[in-house]
Image (cartoon, rainbow, N blue to C red):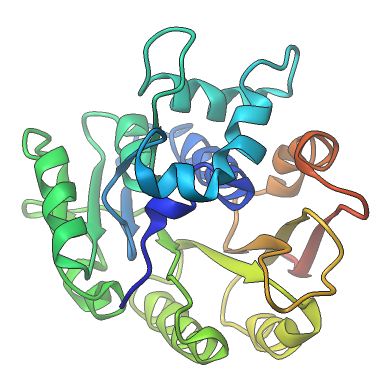
Length: 285
């Protein structure tokens, strides 16, 4: 696998993904009972925006950096910006915290997390990052193969009844990734029917995703929600025109939580022809 997220840290896709992820964690924290977060493709956890990889693409310039200085943003966006700022000096943006670091910082003392990473160098950096956090377990391996090991979750001998699974693969095998994702989601729901699942997916040409959406709508879940942000029209299969989050068993009325963020992304991160989508593929009865 050749993918390195350092080239893309803080881009428009990260912005959408992390706004949604943090909002889902925030919803879980409304109850005192512990919850578990499983990140199946975690990366290294922190990315320096001055590093060669980041400066080569400068994707953060059109992503997180467009939002940092804006006033009076919706709370769901402000929550995300606070999480980014927490990893940086006041008034500066030196590094971008990846999904596992943002999620871990949002945990409470009673919550637990497992972060999986297949690439040895990235997994080693992740393990070092969480070396002193007993709530977080780093698993150097394929996240798809980790479901049986981590679900249903436990803290010692105590079972944890709530979970959020983040699935964010590199899509190096492109369309072949989607059957694996659907199989993994089905396995999660078999082992823990109430688990919340957030799947990030790239959009180059949306029509290629129709089969994935159709099959996702028939998952044995209470609900399936799509949240998408298109930076530009999806008329080129050669670049990332946008991305989306497929949310399985999303919190009640979660579309209303996310809705205020999408116009902000369209206005400040979008190009000509930018668009958003927020749609239930399967709504709770």
